[in-house]
Image (cartoon, rainbow, N blue to C red; front, side, top):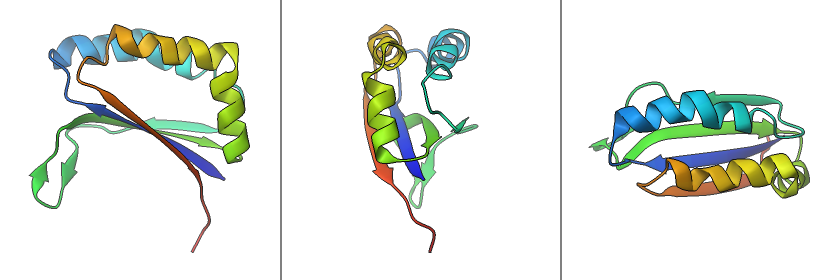
Length: 102
């Protein structure tokens, strides 16, 4: 199993971000080949010290790291990546890695 984690920093307009993300970006991301599961944070993103500079966290599950890389290189992945500039004006961090159960 592998995870693709997307950390969206706080945008200038949270309402506009949320509206665009739900209506446009989620449908694009759900087309990624090999996607097994896709979930997002619900409500604020907090750390031990309280609120963070993040507005939303998306976690996408794939079978392997190579499956994530193939998905990102696909036309669907390119479309989703290209869409980030349309709404993620606060910045975004992309992390992907293999996982193992412990």
